Length: 271
Image (cartoon, rainbow, N blue to C red; front, side, top):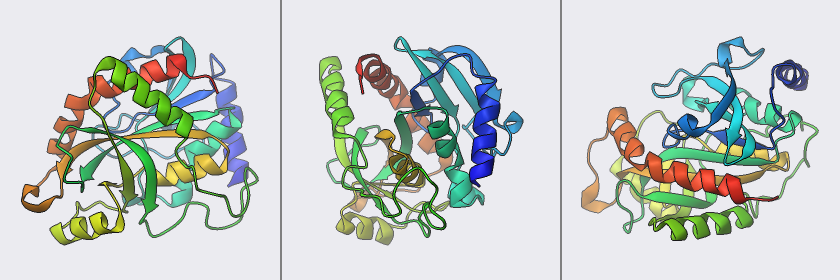
């Protein structure tokens, strides 16, 4: 696998118009941010050696290089999910490539179901920690030479980035939540009993992504900031049937706020 990682990184180095230190995974809730990036290059995943291809509606499937907030950035417009049939190594392959390209800071977003009674649909939640409820850890197998065999996970989500996010949100007058994100393999949404169980385990929100990417990024020494948009609720009598289309609508409504926060964080953050 490491040979494929270096081959992909070397191929991209020949195509890159800049040398970004910041990467963004434009998951559900951050698609609007792609419009704000001053694009210098956009490379379809299908053209990139060894890259998977996103199959989920709403995930466009291209790697963007450009400028945002006055900084050089690269952005994944669409991500890969375990439920699509990819292995964890394939899901996190782009993160390994990011490391080889010199990325030091990663911003990642997702849509999630809220299990905290204080949450409402459309809320933005800054991720303070996570629970990995997926069937496989992405570091399972031979240790890739970017980090220790047994990496510490006491600060998977960078406290300096969290503090900056809080400051930016307060200045803009945006209400935000904080909480623990729990990742399941999907693709089914949770049953009422599962929602109750996850809440008792300490989760404030549940989704189907992000955690594998953050684990691998952390293993590589990349700082991470994670944000969820609460697109449905798994709380008591608030539980209702949910569809992917409804999730997208709720995420789209939150996009301008999420995009404004991330753009300003990138503008201000100094590692």
